[in-house]
Every structure is written in structure tokens, then in C-alpha cells.
Image 1 (cartoon, one colour):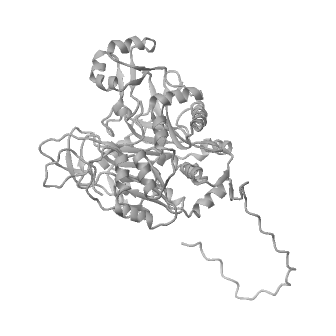
Image 2 (cartoon, rainbow, N blue to C red):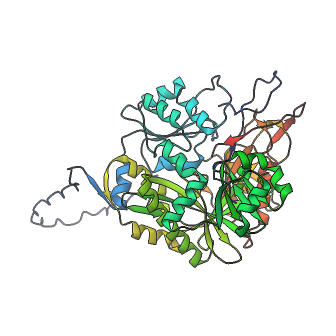
Image 3 (cartoon, rainbow, N blue to C red):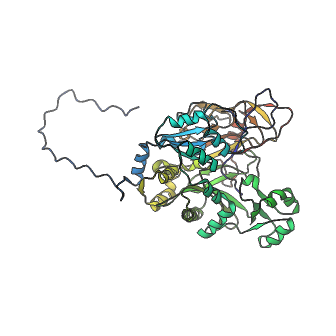
Length: 543
């Protein structure tokens, strides 16, 4: 099963003189050519044309309430290029919404990790101050919203600031309100309910979006499991309500498998027990608005590659290209996503969300895997595709939905245009984790920017950049550093994110030779110093 699109955060190093208990999160991710010269010889004077009557100024488009109403993509783009309200994306890094600041004026990033060594013009990283050990990305955001430097930075923009998050809880909402900020996402309570894997199945059932054959049950023992799932066969997949599939999805074929995960399954309460199928993971992002649900393209997923992640079934990247699956599967996925988005609207949810679909390789059936009611690690693919640059990034429609401005959109026209293969270019990304069962401290790490692959497969740092579209060919890649010098490197820790043109997988969905060269090249640039004694580790999502 595919893992949710947020990866694991590293922990901050204690002082070098202290023996660390376990890794904690890191210290603070020409004008056009001139016109041709006039002829030296003066042209003969022309008789002046009679003056035309002054053209009447076109009246501003107004809604019924007298406010400006945006009609179509052109109006929307202009509106956000002139945006006055300060909007902040507050998270561990800016990876999920990388580049959004160039579409929306006054869009800024407030981050915990400095992936750019202070060189990103719209990213603010405060000075590290003492804090309890982080257990989640919500903890990071709550820390940031209580940091004086962050609060002063927000206040310096004036106006009524807006906040967007990857992950947040009710405490985050309270802190944002205290800081005078509006949160431009559905309430944390509603997001948590939709994020619940059991609830996802029920929403899908109401919308006509089928899940893999399953039962939703409480399990007390292996015998109880078998009694309640006879119709699903011998090979099962069990998911608890929350968490990464790399950690909370269990593959059960016998009692030995069950005993390995018995505590998590039994303590999980109601769980989702599915028939195990041969499948390929896929992802699709969408945004539900008052004018309908706008749907992005179906993307492949990189899942469980040992070169990238230590977690079986763990998400580790995506590809977007025009023939990722058959036209029938792509059309079906778009239709199911639209239906799911319309059902979400009925629950009161609006804005950005992502669905995982499982493509049955034996039958061609498409099944709902899970719903992530937020931006995700796949969002950088969706929001930088060719159709996004031709129209607008998907997340801009999310911001539009929460802006309060009235608008008209032909959602069907947008969805048809975004489904056209001519509007989808080929990109891939891979999240590189430390896969060894070891812990050390980094003494060197590659900087973010553009890298070039040489003929012999070695990598050369080309130049600093924070634009992934600066990648000119498949021999170049944008690398976003996550782990830095002084950080602990432990099993599952994020090292960095590779983004390049073209595919990283073969037609059989295995890593291709080029991908392996990129991965090895970046991994070799992280140099660690051994720690003694050997330490355990812990981690949590940051993307």
C-alpha cells in the first residue's frame, strides 16, 4: 500500500559534548531588445486623422453584492499577481508549495529547516531557541507560532495575515488566531475525520468510489481476524486508522505475520482489512471549490525501493508524464476523483486534497487507497506541470476558494484541458532517506541547487537555484537538501529530494539506470562521523 505523501523529519542534535539520548529535530528546507532605430531622414508629415470619440471604460465585473467578480483564468491570475493580503505557508520546509510565491504576491514561507542557506528571498527561518523534543510536524508549527522572531516577521507585513499549513491541530489554530491570522484550510477537526482511513472508505462508498474489497472490524486475535475475513482470502492487508502505510500497514498471510504486529492491530480499534491484490500505486490531486472539483493528472508512485526508503510499501517519490497509465485508467481516476471531491463538499470540506488509487495489475480495476485532506509530497509535481504554467497551479484555486472573492469558473473546461496529454510534461521526484540501520552525525552535506550528471555517472554541482524548472535536461537535477551538517543520520531520516525531467522508472515500474546514478551520487555526498555507543532513532513526517 502506498504511504502518505509526507516524509520523516530528522531530529536536532544536542550539544556535541553531550551523549545524545536519541536524534532530535535539526537546528534552524533584460528588457526586450530595443526597437529599430528611426530613419535618419524625416518622414513627410501626415494629415492628422480626425479624433475618435473616447472609448468608454469597461465597467468592472461586479457580483450581486457589488464586489468584484473574477471571470476565468485571466482574471484570477491578475488578482493574485496584485494580491495585498500577506499569506504564509508555515511548515518544516517549503517543499510542498515550492514556487507558489511567484504566482501570488505577498506569499511567504516560514520554515524550521533552512534548505537554502539563507538564499531563498521569500523564506524566513528563525533563530533556533530551546524547545521540547518534536514529535510531529504539528509540534514544529506550534513552536514557530510561539517564536518571537516569527511573530514579529508576520506583524511586519501589516494587514490581516493568512496562514496555510501542511499539518496542524487545534492548538495550531488557537496560536494562529492569537497571532491575528486566518487559517486558509478546513478546520483541523474536519481534516482529522476525513484523514481517518475508515472514514475514507465510507466517503468513497457514498460517492461511488470503490475501495479494495474489505471489512471494517475490530480484531482481538488471529483467530478472530480469520473468522471475520473469510471472504477476503488468505493474504490480507490491514491498515490502522492513521499513520504512514510504511508503518501502519501490515501484510498478513499467517499467524506469525500477525504476531509481529498484534499490538498495533489490536490497539488500533476498528481497522481496515483488505484482500491483498497485485497493484501499482498512483496519486492524483484535486481542489474542491464552490464551482466544482478541479482535478489534476494521475501520477505514478515510487514505492518501497530499498535504494530510497527502509520501509516496505513506503512512498518515496512520483512521476508525472502523459501516458503514465492507459487512457481508460486515467479517465476513470479523474472521474472517481471528481466524484469524491463533490462528496467532500457535502461534508463541509473545501480546498486541496489528494487520493491514492491502487491499480490492479491482474484485472485493470482501480481502487481507492486513501485520502490526504491537504497538500502533500506530490504537490510539487502537480503545481509545476505544464498545464499549471499555462493556466494556474492547483493550489492557487485553493487560495482562491478561501480568499472570499467571488468567481466564475468553467470547471469542466479546465478538467478537460488538464487531461490533454499536450498539457502534461515529464518530471520525476525521489525522496532519498538513510536506509542503513545505523546512526551517525553528518560532517558534510550537499547544498541545494542544480547538479549535472557527467558521462561517467558522476555528479557536478552546477549552480545555486531554487527553481526546479531551471533543470534544462535529463542530465540535470534540482536537489533540495533536507539533512545538513550537524544533523543525525539514522534509519529513515530524510537526506534530500531529487527532482529531474523525464522518468526515474522503467515501463515495468522499476528504478532505471539513470535514477540509480542520481541516487548514488547524492547519497555519496553525505558524509557521517560514527557515534558510539550505537543509538536508536525516532522520526515523524515533515512533508
